[in-house]
Structures are given as structure tokens and as C-alpha cells.
Amino acid sequence: MTKKQLSAEEQTVLLNTLSQRFEQNMHRHEGLEWATVQAKLEANTEKLWSLNEMEKTGGEPDVVDYDAENDAYIFFDCSTESPKGRRSACYDREALESRKKNKPEHNAIDMANDMGIDLLTEEQYRALQEIERFDLKTSSWIQTPAPIRELGGALFCDCRYDHVFTYHNGASSYYAARGFRGALRV
Image (cartoon, rainbow, N blue to C red; front, side, top):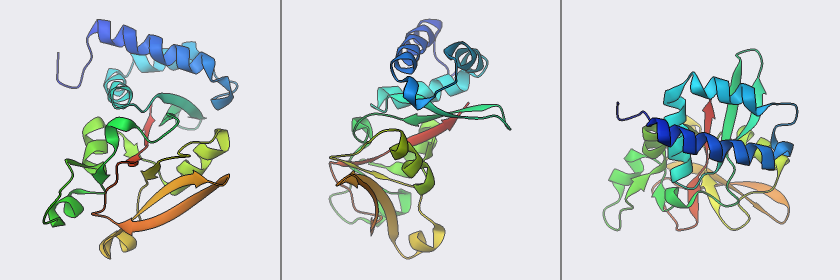
């Protein structure tokens, strides 16, 4: 068993959790059936490992779309607030290393890479908010365009006043209420 593979028991537990969440939130994936999603997951065990990492850090991953052209199910973190196990992280390694004191333990980009997922883009974040409202008390880092990042900034989003906001901050900043949401294609 490799590091990025779940045991048969862990797979069963995760698939049961994902199945229950899928059935309880059909508004997120109307027209899709769990049996086809599960078959796809069972054929891609490395993706199961990534979904388990999303689950372990509080992301509550769920299917939010299906890309028919590429035959891929798209999972996003659907926890009500930014995943608890991914908060208090600055944006990336460069930002982390630039801090002289009070460094956070993690950065969002490396954590996402280690988990095998991508940070949501602004477009994906807004699409998620069309399904239901998230981040009413927290915020989430999103993928930042290179020109902004090169100038030391990074982007994050949240939902306040029934509106989705995109903001900027120094990439080295971190807050207890800011984490990141991930996306995974299976």
C-alpha cells in the first residue's frame, strides 16, 4: 500500500460518507446518479485518497458538476464555512518564507498540492455560491492570477450581505477565519 492509497476499510468508510452526502444534497448534482460516480471513484483510487484528505480537513467534498466532454465528475469542498483543517494558512510558499516572524504552519498552495487538489478559481467559487451559500463567516483563498501574485498580492472570496465578494490581501497574510476550498476532477 503506497502513501497515497487508502486501505479497503478506509475506502468503504469514505464511499459511504460520500454516498450519504450525495443523496442528502441532490440539489448540488441534479440528474446524476451515485452508482456511476462510485464506479468512477473505484476505478481511480488515487482520487479517493485526495477526497479523503479533503474530508479529513473538514471540506465535506461533494459532486457539483459533470464534464461530459471529458467524462469527469467535479467535486468541490461543500462545508458551510471554509474547511477548518485548512485555515490560518498564507497563500503560497514564497509568502510563507517572506514572513520574518509569526509564520503560519502552512500555505494554501502547498497544502492543496499535497492533497492532490486545486484551489477554486474565482469562476468556480462563484458557481459554487450559485448552488447554495457558503463562507458566511469565513473566507477562502482562490487561485490568483500571476500578475497580482508577482506584485505580492493574493485573492480570496466570501459571501456577505447575500453577495459574493472577491478581495485582495498580501499573500503572506493569514487569518483564523480564512482557509481554502478545493476542486477535484474524477
